[in-house]
Amino acid sequence: MSVPYGLGFGRHGPMNPGRLLRAIQDLHRLDVEHVESVQLREESRGEAIFDGDVELFRMRKYPQATHAYAWSYYDDDGRRNDVVVLVEGHIKSARDAVQAVIAMSKPTKEQRRGRQIHKAIRQILLNDWDPVGVKDVPEAHDEYDSYVVDVYRLLLSGATEEQIADHLWHIEAAEIGLSRVGDLEELLPAARKLRALDVGPLKEA
Image (tube, rainbow, N blue to C red; front, top):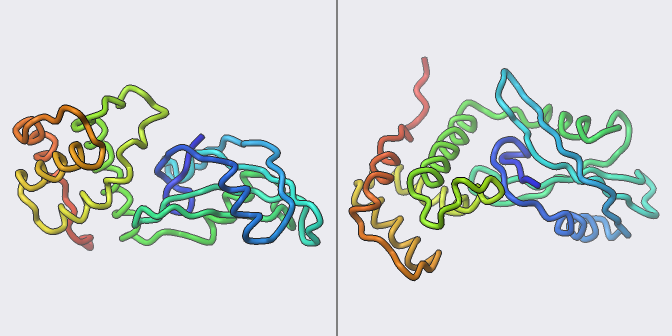
């Protein structure tokens, strides 16, 4: 199962239908039952803007609708949010629900650039850093997602390769809690790739 990024468009991670069920219960004070998970992919100009699972729920004793589609997403600050779309009017399927949200949330150029940078940082952390060794485990590709925002802020501050390597070392030692942590020299190749990313403001053509 996956969690899309930015209103459901882009970044993925494990989704818990039970969490969404509780969110609907808390929001609407309803008796809710999970029905099924629907895998869905939506593309725009050849790029995936939604690639994940949409959960279908049955809602009892709710006058507006008997069912709702729901999914979770990460916003540009890395915060996880929930989307709930009632099955009513023109909303007949999971695809209808996702397309309705897409239509209401066209990202700006700055938002698209931010997502591209987040994606680039994520790929370097996964492929070039990868202290836990999960790059060949697709279901664990979100392992380092929670570190992306802090790395992004570090790059924006103009940090040196050594400072970036030190930040990665600190994550390994203090946050991941590895029993054996390498020296800073081993982290410099990943730090060098991160520092080479263009994270400056969007340049107008």
